[in-house]
Length: 166
Image (cartoon, rainbow, N blue to C red; front, top):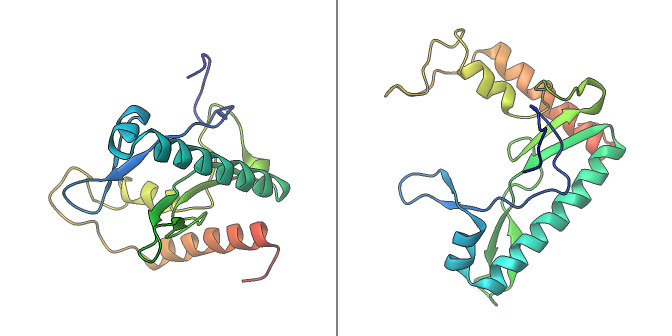
């Protein structure tokens, strides 16, 4: 990574950070590009990196036109069961799979307010939730106020990105 990065710095050019499903559970497991090449082969890993960065750059430009910073996103690819074609699937560029920030509140060195699920994560890890990520207990139910504020962020992201009312 380049020197001088601070919290919320823009990486230029964008980087490819592969992951795979962990053996246990539903969580993603970060892997290196070298590990992705070993698992998938050079050609497929290179294709996935190229496609991922192309989708990200196009989405970043579209978001920027609407005053939104696309900080990062998760893209999931798979092969068609019908003909083996490589396909982009699952949730693509949603507030559940991406980190969206409003450009007008962005300041390098500080985490900007988000238009995505980071709001829920922040509440869950705050003293207000009474929950510890390291505990054996499941997370608490979200209060109606947190649900409504999260919904408002998702709707704002949708409306700003698409130019349509929700």
